[in-house]
Amino acid sequence: MNAKWWQRGIFYQVYPRSFQDTTGNGVGDLEGIRQRLDYLVELGVDAIWISPIYPSPMADHGYDVSDYCGIDPVFGDFETFDRMVEDVHNRGLKLVLDFVPNHTSEQHPWFQESCSSRDNPKRDWYIWRDPAPDGGPPNNWVSYFSGSGWTFHEPTGQYYYHAYLKEQPDLNWRNPEVREEMHNVLRFWMKRGVDGFRVDVIWHLIKDALFRDDPPNPDYKPGDPENMRLQQAYSADQPEVHPVIAGLRRVVDEYPDRMLIGEIYLPVARLVTYYGENLGGANLPFNFQLISASRHAKDLAKIIMDYEAALPPGGWPNWVLGNHDQPRIASRMGPELARIAGMLLLTLRGTPTMYYGDELGMEDVQIPKRATQDPWELNEPGIGVSRDPERTPMQWDASPHAGFTTATPWLPVSPDYVRQNVAALDADPRSILTMYRRLIALRRSHACLEMGTYRTISDEDDVLVYLRENDGERVLVALNLSDETQEFTLPEDMRACRILLSTRMDDPEFAESRLRLRRHEGVLIEIEAEAAPA
Ligand code: GLC
Image (cartoon, rainbow, N blue to C red; front, side, top):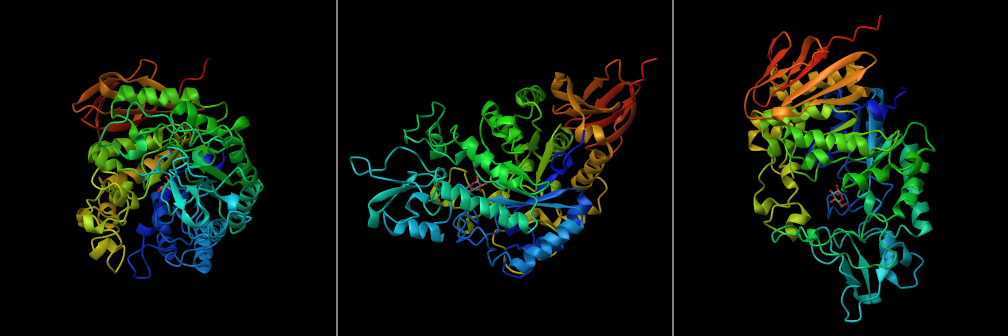
C-alpha cells in the first residue's frame, strides 16, 4: 500500500503556551518550539500539531481568533514562524496548524462590523436572531461553557449565538462569503508551508436552519456541567455540515500532500460520517474513544472492533489518548497503566496522536483557585471542568521552572518536575520516555505495526491480545490490564521469535509458548513468519 505521511506518521500535539518560553514572559512561543525540535526528532514523531497561535484576546487561550492570517505577538511573528517551518521541514517533520472556523473572537473586525448595524454587509456573517416573544433568547441552546448560548446585543436589539464563550461569536457557515474568506485563510497558510489543519469543533459548523430547541438529555445528573443538560440534536452535527467540510477538503487538496483532521466528539456511528461522501471529508476525524474508555480488556476489544467495523471502505483509522481539553492519561490510569495506554496507542491500526508530556508520564497538576486560567472553570467553578491541570509547562529538566521559562510560568509547573523531566528520564533506561522512544522505533521498523491488519486474539482474564500482520511480518501485542499476574499461552499456529519490548523495560518471563505477564504489564512479541505454503 502506498501510504501517505499522515497514515504512517505519529502526530504530537504541542500546546504552544506551555512548551518552551524563550522571551522570558512565562508563556511558550514559536522560537521555543523551534529550539526543541531535536527533542521531537529523537522521540521519533512525524508531525507536530500546534494549538492556535493567531492574534487573540486569549479569552479562550487562542481559540478566540481576531485575525486568521497573523501571529499573536506572545508567540512571535512571521519571521519566527517561517524559521520554525523551515526547521520543521529540514528535519523531515510536518506541521499542522489549528484552524478555528466555528467562531471568531468578538474583537475580530468582522464581528465588529457585524455588530455595527442590522444592515451592515457582514451582519449575516454571524448568527443573529430576534428575541423570543418574551424578550428572552431565541431558543434553549446552551453554551458549552455554561449559560445560554445567546447574548443580547442592546444597540441592534438582537441576540447572537455562541457555542462557547460570549467572546466567541459563531460564524454563519451558511453564508457563501464566509466560506470563501475562510478558504482563503487555508490557502494563506498552505502557501506558507503548512502541511495540514486540525479543525476545531468541526461538527458544530452548521446549526439547524429552523433553530429548533435541543431536547433534554435523559442522562444528565445534577453536578454535571450545564452543557450536558441538553442533547445537541439541533445545535450541532447537522447533515448540511458535510458539504461544508467537503469544501474545506477541496481547498486543502489544491496543494499537494496536505491533510485535514476534524475535532469531533460524537458516538462512533456519527463520527465516521465525517470521512465524508467518497472519503471527501476529513482525512482523520479524531477518534477520542480511548479517552473515555474503561481500562478493561473486554471493553477495549469491543471499542476497537466496533470502530474497525464502522470505518467506511478506505477510511483510515486514528487514535488519540489525550489533548489540552482532557485530564492527562497518567492521572486517569496511574503510571503503570499509562505505559500500557502508550503501547496500545502506538500499536493499534491507524494514526496515533500524542499529547506533549504524556511521554514523560506528566500528570494533571492541581491549580490553586487564584491561579485559574481556564474560562470554563471560572464560569462553572468547583465541579471539575478546569482544563488547566493538563496544560501545565513541559518538564525539560530539574532547573527552576523545569527549564520551561526563566519567569513565573503562566500556569504552575508540576511539583514532581524535579524527578519527572526529559533530562532525568532520558538518562534512565527503564523510564516511560525511554519506553516511548523504543515503542516508536519499533513501530517504524515494523511495517506491520504501521500499516498491517489488526486481529483480536483474546480478551480473557483482562488481558488484551491482538495481532498486527503485514506481508508475513507479525507482531503480537499482549496487554495485562488486570491487577494480577496472568499467564497467556500463544495460539498453536504462532511461534514467538523474541520479545521486542515490555512496558516494564526489562526481560519478561517467557518459556516455550507461555508468557507470564506481570500486573499492568504490556509486551510486544515478534511472531515467526508464517511458513510459505509448500
Ligand atoms: C475546542 C478546543 C477547546 C476550545 C473549544 C472552543 O474544543 O479544543 O480548547 O475551548 O474548541 O474553541
